[in-house]
Length: 271
Length: 248
Image 1: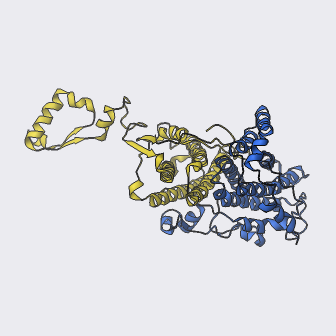
Image 2 (image 1 turned 180 degrees about the horizontal axis):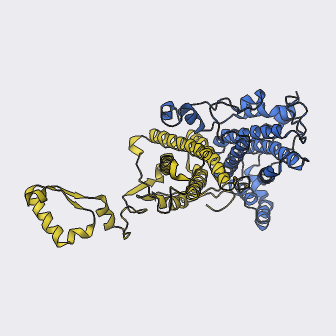
């Protein structure tokens, strides 16, 4: 039952109430001042978030739900890298620049999503408490100096999950071009991160079949479905001839995960 | 004399049609039922002051009409995938002289596979009615230079990511949006790997917290440098919703 809290926070019914058109108009003055303030700060995402509310007046529950869901995942990643980069002796010197960059990106994603959600008149979900042992599956993991391999494995797990999670939610954003475009520009950054952390582990930057690339067995749901060879309703297996066979066909397309699938993957990391 | 005129008369430049010897040959060929070949470059040189008959934009017009909605977005993606697939195929066919290490060749061979599969998948999805074939041109690429290959690959991959990110807003069908999403993250994985080969273990693999999202016009202008045909965007949407980097 430890999942109840987080699942409740993601339930659209329990999100901050959707603003009615009349409320939006009534709040017009404050919303516009948010736009001005955001532009003054030079923050485009903040301005976009505030503007979206101004334009539409009303934010569909789906869009807010996706934003809150994305925020939860970004909290997980941001906390993970913040603790990792701060840990003494964990990350070797040659890898510090990479993981510091990823940490900074995830923190920026958190801050931006919080601002966009706030700009839409809702309250961002609170940061959950995390358990990076995954309820003991990684027993003893505490960002210790000898635990770099586990840290790298978790980084890959989180990044590959992030890519699939954003991809799975894009369709729900199709009616909100501002949020869709912003989400896609995060989605591809998560893919850049994934490629880099995979390659630093000696893996290919891309996912072959449903291979977990040597990650612990409990991470397998992160990769299930990546073996798909049907795209846009067409079996494209034959395109692998001369192009890497089934490996090439499955590597060429990343696959989505549903929100429920992602929550099942993430839940062990929630304290 | 007879032996000479059996050879087909080849006219490769429009100006040749005004040359006296060409006119005389032309009439002679007409008289004896010979063959006259007008190379495509004749037409190209008529409407283009580019002297290079195979230069960027010197060829026939390929129009992507955005009033077709989702089909146009997929055609646009197909154009980019044709460029990428052709580029990596050329690199892979010249590995011996490329200067790429064997580990780098493995990465490029994988990417070649992915891009060819993207191209062929989009070709199949679009069908013959909406398909077209582009010819490529590499004015400033040296396929025997590791640096040139890596830099060109980075250009293509970053452009591809920004193109898909920016064009997604013109899709109306969630299934098409999903296909685009499935491809763009693989392009981003490529972009990361290529950038890290250029500047290992730096921040190059992912330089900004948000990737770019470019509008079709900006993408087409960049892609045109590698395309012989003249890429024309018609029925372009009136608005483009910028991404967080506000540079599309």
